[in-house]
Length: 178
Image (cartoon, rainbow, N blue to C red):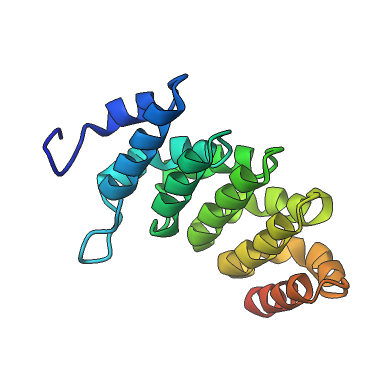
């Protein structure tokens, strides 16, 4: 897997854990380039390996690392199915960017993320970060009818004073159905 255009993803993931912020930023940048979507819209295998480390890197203390990690995740399609449960564990992370991106990737999984409904509903109720709450409402809508058990939380969110949260909750309720 090591070539000039396709770096060894495992080594880059290791560098993301370095004590040196410059090494972490370089690794995140290289992962961003390695994980860009293929021309046919598929997510490359590099993305599968890097999903969780990149989500965790969104909480890095170095701004450059966070920016490259986010840039990589912005182009991701749905994460690998086996990553969903690990992402669910991150939706309540105390660092809002980690929680936000974990929720986003869970939402991109659509119906495959039905096991995440309770965790996403809990985010709407308990997250101190408004963007995480909004994204959790969006993610529940992406899951669709399998998120039916989240209707009470979404109904409450649809009446919130934050217009974006209310809109996303209403859209999720429509996607879930009655």
